[in-house]
Image (cartoon, rainbow, N blue to C red):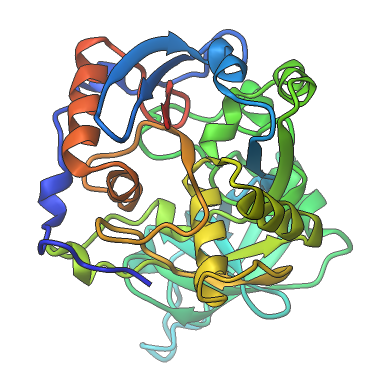
Length: 367
């Protein structure tokens, strides 16, 4: 699904970022972020604010949003004392374990990242307590992967997600160097979040308020939704040197019938299709690849699409996105949509102008 261009290295998508520009909290009010507008044809830049975003849209544009909802996926468990399978007669050590759920697998099983992973082996049982100490969830480790990856089988409960809401924590990214707080339950979630399943927010959508969406619709802009559940790939660093060697984890997505029809009609009419976030880009372009560039069809599936320079975009004409990590697949995607030189120049400009970076940071509109 990707086309190598000039043998780029992952290191070619690096940039210097002062740590103080990494946003640790959301702005005081949703929608108060700054916005850097870039003309992707020539690299021209303009500094503005997200409040101007509706004014940059045109009647007839199709704006596509990701309605995935972040789950309380960070949990803390107590290792139950079980027979050590590597040492008959021994006992596995007990202690607290951090578990980040990343993706549901088969019935009752979840893929997860576990810390400290080296002490959690196949057959170990994990008890997830409430604040009062009552065990709310139980799981057994049934597979072991690399880099702390585990497959957990949970004992059945009446409402798994309700229990997560009770005992789980909002899975803030590792570059937010604080514990999650009550404000994150609301602010690390878009106002249009609906389908539960993400372990990281589709952050370009965090800027929108209901009043902004109403203003956009009143202008004659069509709004449609897809779902892509953000998974493990968001947290995993690229562990290869060459861009064309990058392989991403699969993520689940859904394109409803109404959205497929809206995209197809916009394409026929020659109207702009504007993606809010790289998750929307990946969803639409993966679906277009499945139809070989033809009309989109309602579809539910999984994608590991990796978009790099040289990729032929079939659907998306403009992109609203946050500023991304150095040497990340998301920065590479944005560099495919515009150009590496223009994007890195824009990032240099953003650093000089003290834009706020990453999930709770400012945004960029590429037209």
